[in-house]
Image 1 (tube, rainbow, N blue to C red):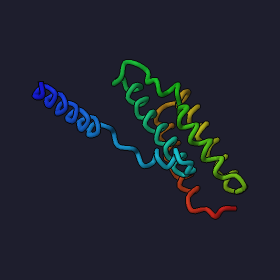
Image 2 (image 1 turned 90 degrees about the vertical axis):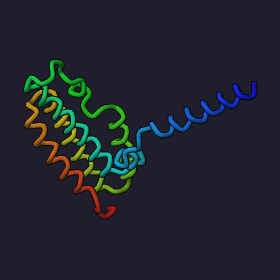
Image 3 (image 1 turned 135 degrees about the horizontal axis):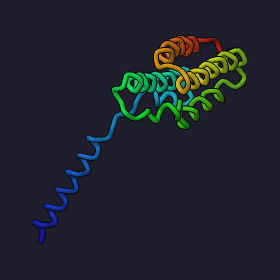
Image 4 (image 1 turned 45 degrees about the vertical axis):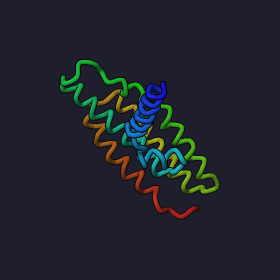
Length: 142
């Protein structure tokens, strides 16, 4: 009886270790975005659109038979939440809020382009978005 109990305990310990080892690591960019970092939230959204544009490009080339679902999802609700939180962190910093608002308009425009345009144009747009996101960094809080 004690041997069976020991085996079950050993099995439980092995399963606990295995579950810890198989958890996916946290994306540092997403962690910063979740905390309200405007640059990270912007880059994460742009990266999401870029990845979807790559999938759309495969679909347009006939490599995928089904239209990628991400085309309709765009940035997605979670990333929109990160952008809203980032916007809130800029409260009282009028210039930075305006610049962030312009970048959010670019994100929305790129989302529409993802749905309506060719992937090639979306990829070019996401490259410009990355520059816009980078411009949000190291700005004085005014």
